[in-house]
Amino acid sequence: MAVIAAHGAQTHGAGHMSPAKRLQVNRVGLWLFFFSESIIFGLLFTSRFFLLGTHQEHVDQFLGLVITIVLLASSVTAYTAETAMEKGNRKLAAWSLFATILLGVVFAIGVGFEWSVAEFGIKTAVEGQDPHNVVWGTVFFSMTGLHAAHVVSGVLMLGLALMMLLRGHFSKDSHWGISSTIMYWHFVDVVWVFYYPALYLVAGGGTHTG
Amino acid sequence: MPAMGAFQKGYVVAIVLAVMTILEYLFAVHVDDLQVRFLGLAITALAKVYFIAYYFMHIYRCWREEAH
Image 1 (cartoon, each protein chain N blue to C red):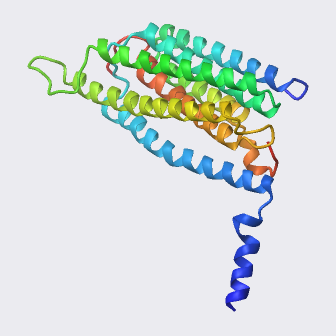
Image 2: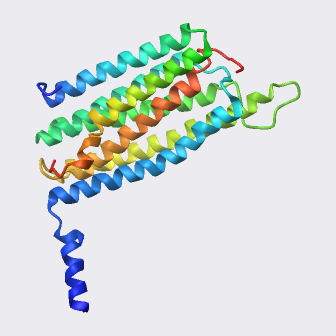
Image 3: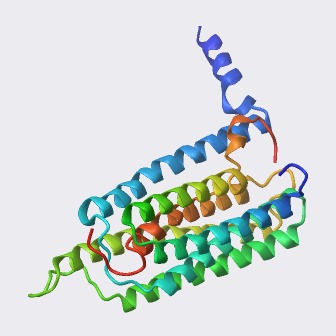
């Protein structure tokens, strides 16, 4: 009985999967991870509208647009890195990964700069100050902070992937380490696609109480 | 976009996303009606996510048993 069970486990276990099947399972697993992450990001996104409606404090519109385009550009370089790897062009893949890291760092610096010049806070409202200011501050710093944390972890993972690539790991036929890291990077971009209008644009570029 | 190479396809999608981002900004700044603005931003965001998930993240590969 135990032998049959063991045989069954081997037959259906990960060790007997074809490389293509294993890759498919990896991809589905990664998407499930994205789904679980989406719940966290989604809750913050929902709380922004639940607490404040469409109210928005002043944020730097130009800076918001610039960092959004920087993150979008980093998705293009990430796509280039993956496509280059699929075609066996390691040199282009390495340079594209490097460019992605650089753009990720620029984005993180942009968010840090936005934080440093923000006209709102998370401390108790001072007398006479609009209480929306503090709620907005909490929402804004929570949303951008969680997202920036993912950007920083993405940069670290991209750096690790680049180091491994330069040390001879990965090939045209086996580069899941790079593909998965790049998918994670695109996911971070997807989150910003929702966060950018929610934090910068929903009030029409200025402050608005809805 | 079946006839395009992989690189070109990515760059075309990137240009589409960049144009959508700028249009999204201009739309938000110039449209006064809150409901129209909210709806426009939501539709743009969903369209951008479709492009990223399909062309950059290759979501369709979850249903295909294929190598790199």
